[in-house]
Structures are given as C-alpha cells and as structure tokens.
Length: 559
Image 1 (tube, rainbow, N blue to C red):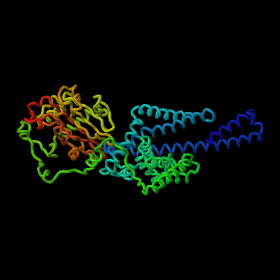
Image 2: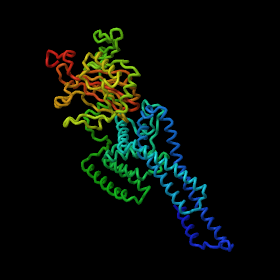
Image 3: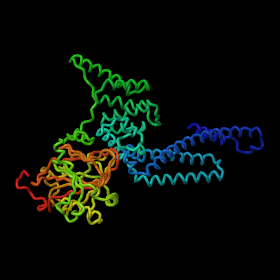
Image 4: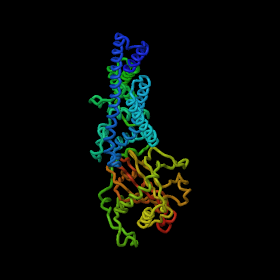
C-alpha cells in the first residue's frame, strides 16, 4: 500500500522539522505548502483505495440483493434448482466470510489513520464514529447469523450432489453450467462461474475422483478461454489440476498436452517442468511396449468405481429408460373406483385406484389426501426434520449414509387430528391394522436427494431388524407423494424394472412379504435423485402383528 507509506513518510518529515514560530519566517512557511501537497496526494491515494474496496463491496452486495429479492418470491422453487442450492451453500459458507475480511481490514486501517494524523475535525470524527458503529453492527449481526450458516460439509455435499445428478441423468458440464436443466424454469436458472466449476473440480480431486476433476476443470478452462474473468483463478492453476487428473486416468498424451500449455503460460512452473520430463519418459516407454506387442492402447474415460452393482439399471430407470412390460401384461392393468369390499366409508364415495404394476402388485390411489392435509403434515414435520438414517445390517445401529440424502421426521397419531385421519384412511383402504404400524414418517429430499436401492423388510440375514418393536416384519408399504417434482425423483423397482413418478396427492401401496411371510425381493426399490424440484413424501410401514385375520397365510409354504 504505497499511499500508506507515503503518508507515514510525510508525517515523519513534518514531525522532525521545527515546530516553533513558523509564522516568523515566510521561507519556512513555504516548506509547509509542499508538505501539505504531499499529504493531499497521499490522501487521494487512500481515497482511491477505499473507493475501490467500497465499489467491490457494493457490486457484490447488489448481486446478492437482486438474487435474494428474486429467490424469496418463490424460495422452494428457487432452491429446487440444484445450481441455486449449491451456490447458496458456497455463498454462505465462504463468500460472506471473505466479505467480512474485507470490511474488517477497512475498519482497522481507518482506525489506524485516525490515530496517526490527528487532522480530523470534530465533525469528521463524529462521522467516523458513526461509520465504525454501523460496521460493528454489521459484523455483530453476521456473527450471530453465522451459527445458522452451512459449513464445509454442506458445501461439499452440494457439490457431490451436482456430480451425482450429472451422472444419473447423463448431463454434460455445459448444460449444468448454464443451469438449463430439464424441467427447470428460466426464472430460476442460474449459471456456474469459472470459480464454481473450479470448486466442483477441487471437491472431486479431494475425493481422488479424477474423472469428475477432469470434467469440471475442463469446463472452468473453457469458460476462461471464452472470456469469462475470475478474480481468484487463472489458467495455470486449472491446467495444473487437469494434467495430473488425466495422468491418473492413464491418459499420458493429454497430460503432456496440458503440461505444455501450462508452461507456455508460466515457463518457470517447477512442478510442471518436472512433470514434463516424467510424462515424456512414460509416454516413450509406453509406445515402445505397444510397438513390441504390436498393439495400441485405447485411452477411455470412465466414471469411478461404484459399490452399487445395479447402478446402470437403477440410473436407466431414473431417466425413464429400460422399462419393460409386454402389451399383453399392460392390457391387464386397470383403473377403477375402489370401495374395499363395500367399506362403509367408501360405498358412496369410492377412491380412484390405478394398477401401476402387476408382479409384484403395485397400486396407486389418486386424490387420497387434500392440499390442506398435506400442508398441515409438512408444518408439523418441518421443525423436527433430521438427517435420515439407515439401520446398519451388521450392528443394527442407526447411522447416516451417503446413499440416503434426505431429512425425515416422525409423527404420531396423537399429535394432530390430521395425522390420525390419514392413519385411519390407510387402514380403511388397505384393510390392514395400522395400530401396530410405525409412526408416519415424513421425508423431504435435499440437493440431488435420493435413497439408493434397498428393501423395506428385514431379510433372513437380519433377524433382529425390528425386534425392538415387537410387531414382526414390515408386511406392506404405503408411500404418499406430497409434492410434484419437475424432473427426477421417481420411485423405481430395480428387480422388475418399474418406474413410478411422483404425483401430488397420490399414494402407492405394495406388500413387502408374501402370504407365507417370506420377503418379496421383487420389491427392492429406490428413490431417484431429485433433479429439479422439492420432493416431499410420507410413508407408513405396516407390520405383521394384527394382520393374522386380515391377510391370511396361504395353504402352501410357497404362497
């Protein structure tokens, strides 16, 4: 800060000169004019520096102000777009802290200048105090609000969600970066900046996921080449990550290409110079081996290994691909008015029932709950939402898992008449006793929210899965959709290749167990990642106890 040292220099000169009887010599008084001129020059430098910082703060504030004004008109719709959700996590976790640093630096400098110069008038001093009080109020408010901010884990989770959506729905980085996702409204679309793309690549790199590191670093470099500017990122840094990530995937020629481009920008880059020699040696060695064996290595990029064996089938179903049902089977599916054997509640007003699948039988009930009932359930659940857990099949302990991204809450029948009404409706329609069922579980899915393939029932290798409940295994599942989802979010049955799409106010129902009590493995299902939208569901897991005379065992063990 040249202006600051210039100002200090002038003050030191002024303090070292004679302070007595200036008025007695015009010759000495002329020196004061030049001293004052130097001070004015330094002050102008200071003003320019402060104005530049203030302009930076004003631009950032204006951007966030415009964004917040639009977002708060439709919060759920805005955050239903995953790019907006990711940028919100990043903004609150990192960008506000960076702004705070700028503001505090200004306050510190301003205080220091005030104590050194002693040239302020009382009026200026009062104005300075006012500014300092305003800044202190802002910092205090920011400190209080920060306890509610997302953390590094949230920002990383949102970044991973974007990459999960990218893979599941086969979206290229251009589509993700422009925010033009299937089902998204232009009103809610938001772009990823060079810095955003770099951050996504950096998250992938930290996970040793070099496939996605390459994809997002290439996108960041592309946007830089197209003229987008960045105050924090340059091509050299991006190329450094790129060359290493493609090398880790076995693409030596491309690693060499990126390294040479890096050195064109920074010939003194120590790591790149070392890598250049190493990559050239490795490539020469590889070509000699290929020539000796009479073959050529084909370099292909593949996503990282995955623990889910049915990943390909699962993702196809999430995209609406690969659904298999013959026309003959399709012709046997019907829609009907259903009164559950002339149940008193539904003789006059039967419910609308639709066959979704034949084997296993999966049915959907339309207009089964009202908007008012669903809104009340959401209101009851929202303050109690906690990260959804799974039961560890080995230890039986409830724990979070990367393959279940949602929050859930449990509502008992006694908590509100609406919950009791829904429970009674489930019992009347299914004919099953819900007094031994689990409480109503309400779930809300987050960014890229999903629940990968699983069984609702406890398998034979999990004999103690529901022992603490004392009500037997989960005989059936009732799944109520409490919101529409613009894109993604289907419920898919991976064993039979069925996809069922969310529709607000409808519920799907299926039996998890055969009449013999054995688990029906055809009911293995998953909740696909939500691409665009806000997915709310509630489910009721109905248990065996109490169903002995409502769903009787078959005469044969194989029933």
